[in-house]
Image 1 (cartoon, helix red, strand yellow):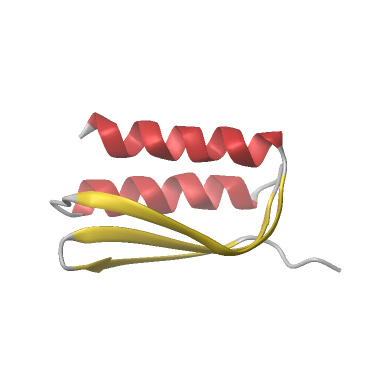
Image 2 (cartoon, rainbow, N blue to C red):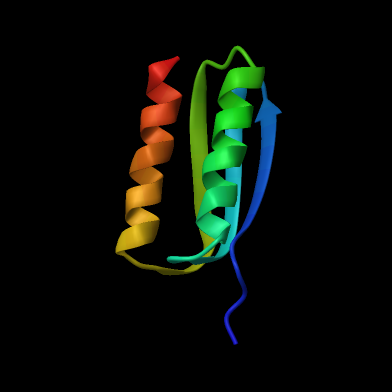
Length: 77
């Protein structure tokens, strides 16, 4: 069984980092990604955002769409 998406947000040297692991697929875990991205961007004065995908095991079109939404959140500020 593939593991669900986990999101670990952190800030290092003024850069927001979202470390993802598991499945980036349709389901409730995508909401977690968007919420974590929003909280990270709004709570900090960041110079940029990095999304680490090394631990992602599967991606579908919904996951790609969510990455686009995270990009939109990061560029709105």
